[in-house]
Amino acid sequence: MARISIIIPTVNEERALPRFFRQLRQLYPAPDEIIVVDGGSNDLTVSLIENEMATATRNGLPVFRLIRSPIARRSYQMNAGVAAATGDYLCFLHADTALPDDALMVIEQTLANPKLAAGGFISLMRGPLRTCWFTSFHNFIKTYYAPLFFRPYLFFARGARLLFGDQAIFCRREQFLACGGYANELPIMEEADMLLRLVQYGRIRQVNRVVESSDRRVAKWGFWRANALFLYVGILWGVGYSAEKLKQLYEDIR
Image 1 (cartoon, rainbow, N blue to C red):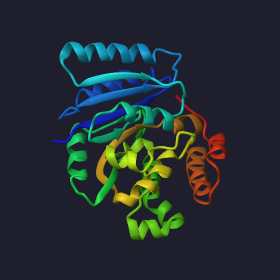
Image 2: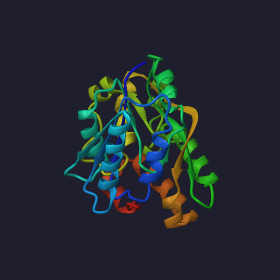
Image 3: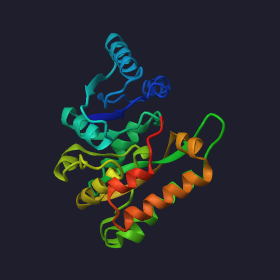
Image 4: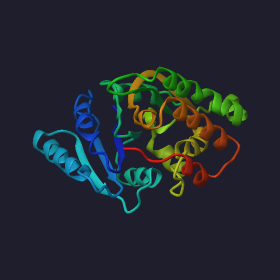
């Protein structure tokens, strides 16, 4: 089996981490290494990570490392994680997203196909009181309609699909580095930018398996505002608005 590195960017994720770490321990087979890249949290995030590292060491669990990033930006943090990673395959995972127990087997089986360059899961947005079915469905179809409308050549000729961070994107480390990785300067839509370069090495696939992601944006913004913003940001990206302008519409929520 190929070596798999899970890379997790964090900033002030103390609320999500206890449950997140419990779910990581359920993965079977286990990842070869887990790399958490913290962007300067000022809550209990780092303490929770260090406690989990100590637990992993005591119990002989996978290699667990903490990297402190001088910049709190997911693109920069994830690149820093890749630089430290030793796995053949990479999986980029947000702290508010839960993988299925056999996720690494799914990754292994998907990337065994040399015609595929990357993949991601179907994201089901869920909170303690509800499941956001409409939002989850819209995000599912956006994986297809966004590249179809805005990059039709890449959609038909190359198999481009638009995946987002809450879909637990995975790819080969060698090809990730060859395409240039994430653009460090991008504060938003860094996954789309990277995948449109990575697609030169093979098709992008949304696998038929579900990950559960937090509904914290919908809970904070409300149903109508959240879905309108998701759509609006996608359209503006498609017609070429700068990432800096898009980021002004898309506040960080923890």
